[in-house]
Length: 250
Image 1: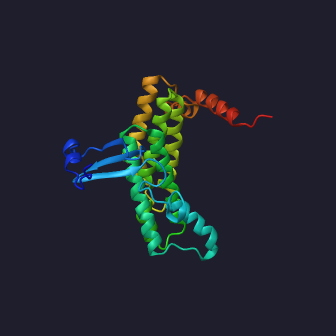
Image 2: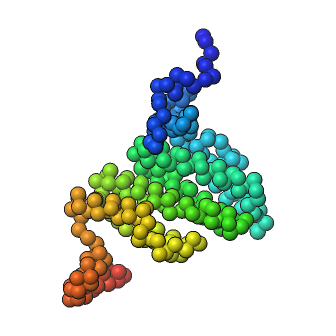
């Protein structure tokens, strides 16, 4: 039996790289497990579909983030992110980014949302323990993008289940969460929120779903429309309905 070749010639010829496209696929590994592959310029990235994308178990944990949580508990107030830990955090951010865009390209939205959620949790932790404000901001600048992926993927997962109303609810909640990032976040970009491409994309997605599935506007949206149209009696009735909905039942 001949040995397997060490080069990738055959693989790369059969799977050409397309600039500007996220080309991903799931294939079977030598042991029968599913692995995820991403075609990149001059090569292929191969990732595990669960746990950490590179298949390692830092400190015996599923991910480096899980390992950091354990270290923080053990070390208590003496815990800090030194240069080595910061480097490992950056590695995990990058690995989960690669896998997340693969899941999005393959329309596996639940897995894409889960990987985005992991990245946001790691970002929260690393910002809280950042060795410097500059290091924290270097990562926080990507929060809107990661959050966008999570919102988009979660909404599309609901849409695949024929839950258009739930998808719009996800988009509404996500847009509000994104607004808080712009208003309250360390980057102080509140004035850019309404013109941000990510925000515009989510709003367009919401409008398209509402139109296609004929989903009625929420009471809050009807109220905004009534006020904008100076229909104050209608606005008053809508406020009463919203207040009744928010009133705790006895």
